[in-house]
Length: 258
Image (cartoon, rainbow, N blue to C red; front, side):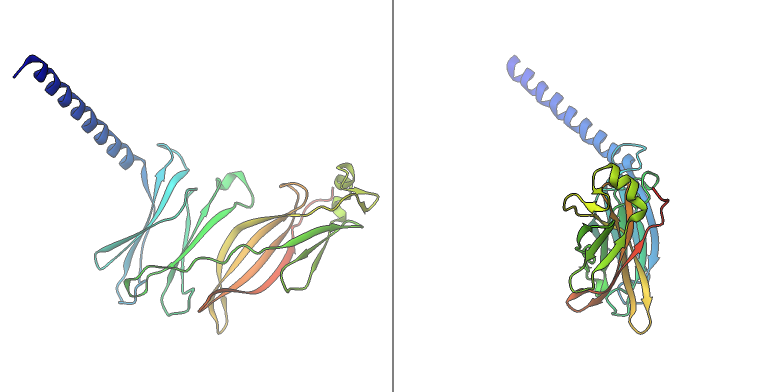
């Protein structure tokens, strides 16, 4: 073998070793950054045997509370099924028969920000059923779409589809709104909409004779994110063609006068 061939062979060997070392390091780092966030056993499939439910988070960086990926893993009869959810902080998990088939389903909500950083934390929500060892995405109800508008005399109106319009009294914000130029002596200076956030809460509740259902809460803010006016509370029932909105109401947020 010529000297050049020997040098080339040596270089190929060195490159192969480097790639192998990088792969091992990456594998070790990946394992180190993984964390089990939830582990419980529940009967989900209908075979009368408990299944293992695990939620695993892959940290953005070692020691971080933020997970760049959150994975739901359900093992039944030795078969593992994985669902990749979203990024976020440590999720909340609950079990309820959402689609009314006699078996518990899995509801997971993932906060988008740290619990300590906000009063109402935007969430991503996911719902799944595993009946007969088949994974089915039940989805979750969409955030309620609202049309809103400030009115003269320190009022605001909100409309949700066919539901009766709801009027909010915002006189307790008179001073701030006047200073910011939204109103001038109770007269609205220009058309202005309110800000309706996505869900910050999605939880199960019981209806007599209709089983478990979902209640969502969205925060209604005024002219800025700290101007909390009310909660939009929606109630949903799962039917064959998906989620149906059965009730919606507004609950004012208690704040100090401004």
